[in-house]
Length: 216
Image (cartoon, rainbow, N blue to C red; front, side, top):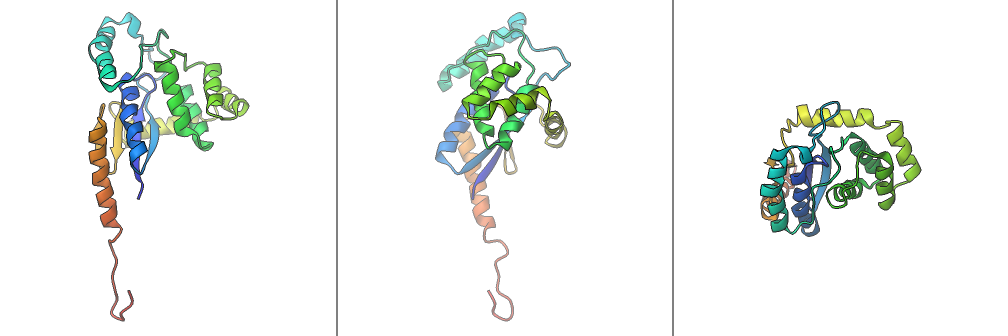
């Protein structure tokens, strides 16, 4: 039985980008289904994050983020998109992509566009170009973002993350009843997935019985 994973993240979160790597590896080896869930670290109208002008964030990048990226073998850079973009339009694009069966492909492409190519993922034309690269219909995609077709859907998804799922930091991975907050290794993810697989296998036999007439 397929193990379902909900991965809460934001496109401007470096640890979310790093956390995608181990998850991608696990997906190649195990029967898992990943659903990326939106979480905005700094939603509009709050002031945008601008690490290039915040010494403590630059220090964190040099002290924690880059060393973690090197250890994991992940190519990434601190994007010179200053300040960092709001991500609501990118997430609205994800809702469009999900409806067209390309949710994970588009999500991954937006991530790499920001942390590897330093593209402005708040720009509708940039997002439309990325949509075309994963074979989404670009005219319909652009129109959906311009008209804010998925605005309410996205707001409901954020409400779920903030209030129902009670997500307080990203990345957060929910696998069955297990909640993993923060960057998780491939081994840690595999451990929790195997535990969930065992539980699912046991549940397959729950309720099997024979009645007094011998019907089984």
